[in-house]
Image: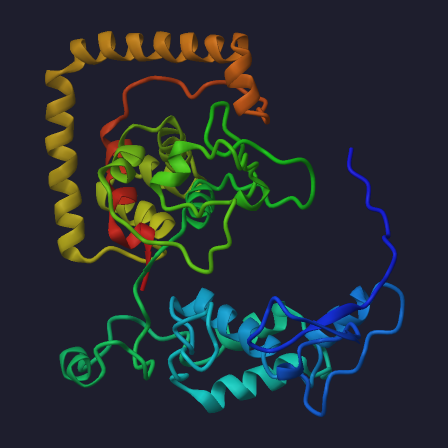
Length: 374
């Protein structure tokens, strides 16, 4: 257990400028940075000064805090901030692409307005997400013409195509399956190991000393270091996760078990099933070309599975046995138990062959449209 003790308060001696080894005799009172204190910084006089420091940081007279918060909120939603160096808003940083907009949002963020409290992020996100700029698509008319004028999209004439972070992609897959547990609060859950939890990824347990390999494959940030933005890479392991992970197989089967998909299957019309699956995965209706490709895929997959039916049975039996052996080994191994400090309740995903329809759904999850925002 750790305890906090209040030490004896004291003022520090002044260091002469450009001579750090020389200490002046005068004492400097505790206060906020002069550079961010219009009219001079007032000394902290109450207790340790921590409360006064917090009030000075989150003060309407502080020109920096609100701009940093607004810029990071904008970056989270657009992929790039109004200032593209979120860690540096100083003189060496690039100029804001829209300085008046940044100033307005910072002012609005600090105000107490009807139905909104100052310094709260949720109303700020709502304001930005209801804007015409945020609701644009990456596929806009005159794309080639505008690309020549503003290739970096500094003027926000289109949306930036962005890949979902692992947590958002996992939650998106659970939503497609109709299995997302949206309950609030509660203990953390294991995001990567069987038996799988369906709680939102925000409740995932992260061991800083042993970050799961799956998370690092999807560019999860190092939890021991401050990180303003994650890298975005495309590596084979990401596709292998969608191809081989029991979690993905479970999602695929749950999608096929949704009421609207089961109703389409009962109609015995393949086009109806494809439309139902597209509405679940992509939130849209497929066009004629996509319907044709889906029909061809199903025909080929049905023939392929028929040819390899005997071989599939052997491989699946081995896979089921291997999964059970690994689970038993993890339960007995103290070392693995120490790394996986959180375990979920439930059973293993059944190791059985995917049907042609399930294979089609898995292929759709492979697509860029499922993993990217445009």
